[in-house]
Amino acid sequence: MRDDLKVIRLKEKPNFTGFKIPVLYPCHYIPEKLIAFSKMKNEMNKNSFVHFYEIDEKILPFARNRGNYISNINQFQGAIGCDYSMYRNMPIFIQEYQTLLNHELMFYMQKLGISVIPNVRYGDECSYSFCFEGIPKNSILSIGTHGCIKTEDDINCHIKGIQETIRKLKPEALIFYGAVHEEIEALLYCKKVFYRKFDSDTSSYYKSVFEKNNPFLEGFEFGGE
Image 1 (cartoon, rainbow, N blue to C red):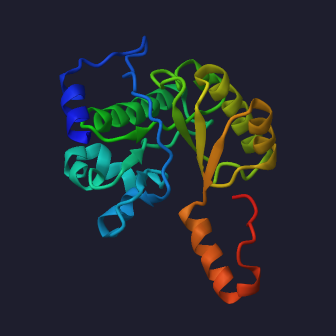
Image 2 (spheres, rainbow, N blue to C red):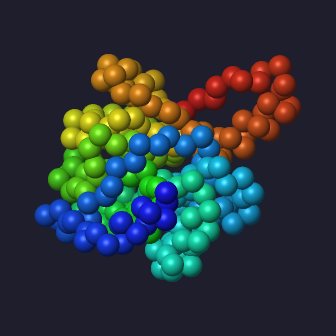
């Protein structure tokens, strides 16, 4: 099935938006497990999706030498799209460049037959004119929140970004990497958007250590990140 998909997509000519951003294919599969890009080489369980929710230094090798990593990624069920940083205080032209880089790498993987869940990364309202370009409607989409909802401004930014994601893209479901703030949960409930949350690697590590030392509290949820 994947080989057939690869042949079809290799023959197709890419479509581009007005911002010259490649138009991505939708994905309709929700993974059971995620593995970080930097850890995939040593991961024995291939029944998971590779994610790029790591600091830029750890995922920069993929942008520089993408062909060297495709065979490894291809061993897994799929990937969540690239997530090179886009901060609200970045100059707008850098935000545009990071958006183009993320989308171009996602499209590269899709053309090679890899199932890619499009990643949505936005800054403030100024980024809305380009950050959603090329992302398919009615698809499973992913959003990273780890380290991004520490302040009230961060939370408000994510609420506005998710509102705009839902309005423009009408996602089939949302995947979150990291904590989901209660105000965001309330928004998703009101908008009737199904979502699934995956703990960040940092949160999972501390949670496992905590539960090991406090087995009677196993299963309790930790706070925001």
